[in-house]
Image (cartoon, rainbow, N blue to C red; front, side, top):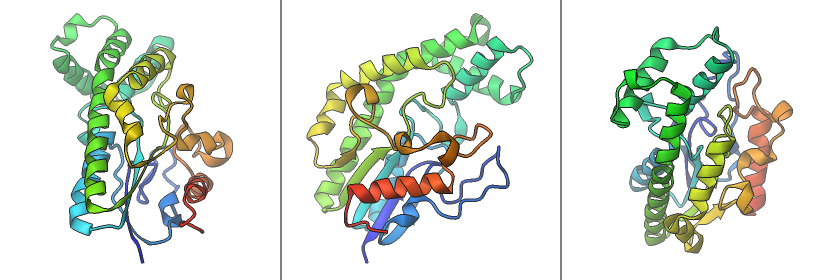
Length: 262
């Protein structure tokens, strides 16, 4: 039986627990629909580089025949260990602007904002508009998002090619799709993505990049494009696939590779 390694974030994690829907429990995920001996190392909150690096480490430990990477939102930066998540700050700032009484985790918000201020080499007192501050940070770090992920992808593509391991890569959802008031950042991000020589070099790789270049404006698509938000996504603003959603993603993947039949 073929040994398959799956690396991703909460969209692929069989042990995912919803804070907004605590009664929900994954019975199956899309990776359960793969035909083979599956090792799933997906971890909640992982950014793309961590997803890839975890797979690289596991390749030499588990010696799989096939590796499947389910990348997370390209715009998520520094989410490992939740040091700082710009999308959390961004969403809180947007909601605070429209509703001063908005309830949020003030301790976490302050901690992340101070971490962000440190990365921007400024002080919290210098920031009058948190919303604008986060926008400024995200736009200035977009080239780093693209560069770091592209470089990590090049690494695992070359490693798998050297070891004769089959490799499939797709993206679960679009950049900034989980952010409120996101259009300006998404446009800036997509421009950087399709103008990056390093990212465009991935087109010439031997890897199967499903939906490449993963942005609708450039003719690509992501896994969430096949889902219906009312039927396939958990409610109460959770944003993760339910059992029906996982089945659709599994069917979509299997349809792309005929050696995976349910």
